[in-house]
Length: 445
Image 1 (cartoon, one colour):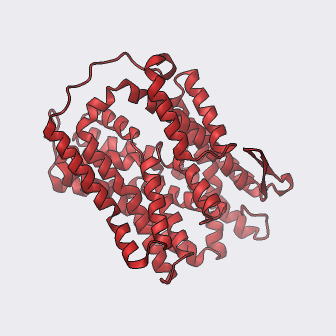
Image 2 (cartoon, rainbow, N blue to C red):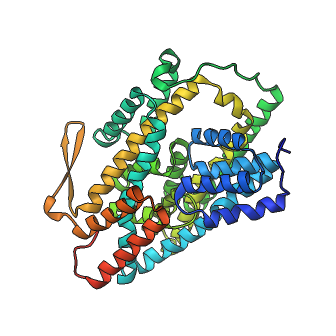
Image 3 (cartoon, helix red, strand yellow):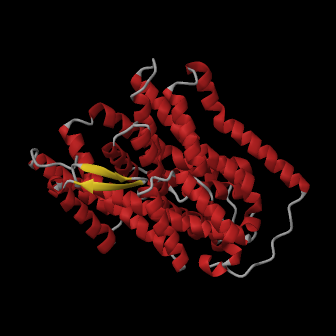
């Protein structure tokens, strides 16, 4: 029971989580706002201060912060069963919708009406990603040093092709080491006394929880490896998204850089245009934007079924991707939540988190730049100078229809502040009109 607030019964909480999952369009910010309104303002299940502390805690973790926040609240209200119910029911509605759209994309993506529908969605993606850069930057740029970290990250991920996990690890380790020596650089508050260490019994329970959830996390992958062999594409998909889930900080937009590097450039699972398609679909479905991973996993499995029916392989790939991406959230929450206050009071960890957030701004800025080139130009080349790569566009391939729709999205989202749902609806309708009225016009892709 939480002191000072009204605790719900378990059934009441179970009915709320899928409702939020079905209504939460617009990615993590919208989902977090809906959670706050539902559990703090309307129902009083948790107080405002505790909610904000939990949100900060979830921002420390790799993976989808909104789902982790729901899992934490469920855990705090009803223990492990509450966390499981909240985390699963929060994500299932969007995952099912995304699977249906992925099937439609593969089966009917070349039909003119469907292509026109996706055309309008893609045009809004650039404005959405730029808006994400602005939003994160407002929180991250507390000092000039953090702005410098962001600029260096932009160069490292884009021009130097440094892998995203290595970049984040390097930034975190550096800040952890030097943060207390130059607290002004990371905007660190005055040190506060750490809470007393937890008892031995708590540490034993934590170790058991970690081992249990690592086993649960990798059990489906191990079963598939036994049935299909370790070289099957599904095993590669599972291992890839396991690494992504464990090392991706900063939410869905941050992981797009890694997806672009690995799934598009290195592995060749999808084309850049399909990456944009997936993000457009994820932005129009309920649930977190990180569901774009499900779309990538679906296409990757469809194209290398390894003896399975392609659509069946795609469905397995989609479910495996979702499991490997979201199951770690339960590992993080159930093992670390008991230490929430202790983690928050650690200055070295605070420095690392500030640096990671700044680095994510640079990474997401590169994603916006990369997307912009592929949205607005039909031909994007690359010039390599030693270790440096520089993208080059062919100006003659500028897509005027894409430019107009992207401009519309920018005005609606960044100037008029009309919100994501209105922006996506407007660009989708405009895209349908352009494509169906002028079928021979130069398209977005």
